[in-house]
Image 1 (cartoon, one colour):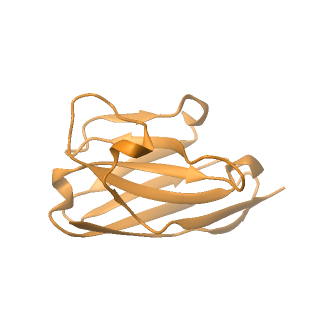
Image 2 (cartoon, one colour):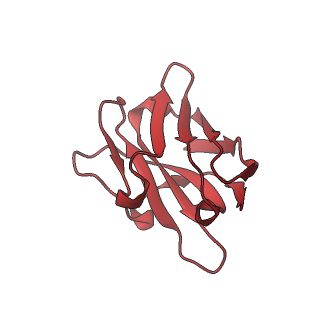
Image 3 (cartoon, helix red, strand yellow):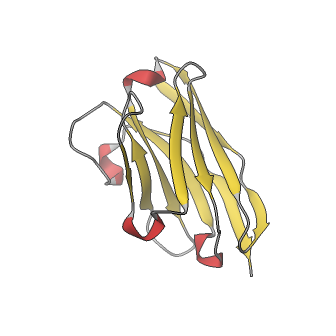
Length: 125
């Protein structure tokens, strides 16, 4: 079992930045591929970014490339999401997730085994 706890959300003006963190505990988080998803009100949860277990491979939703950066520090069992140039449409609850590692990039929610409780990000115009 892996327990995931997100933090770092909040209210920010459009154009601003936030860095989300996801602290992992339980089984060694460095053994897992990890990802960020988000869910806006009335919408389905959507993929944001994924990072391989070792941190050497990252993948982003096309619409977010260049603004968001996913990273991890396995020594601290922590996943990060740096979000820059935020827009009102980035408003959502952001979730971190973990799954057993695969070579294939996985972007579907059903394939991830462990989830955090989410952290709210609100971007004002």
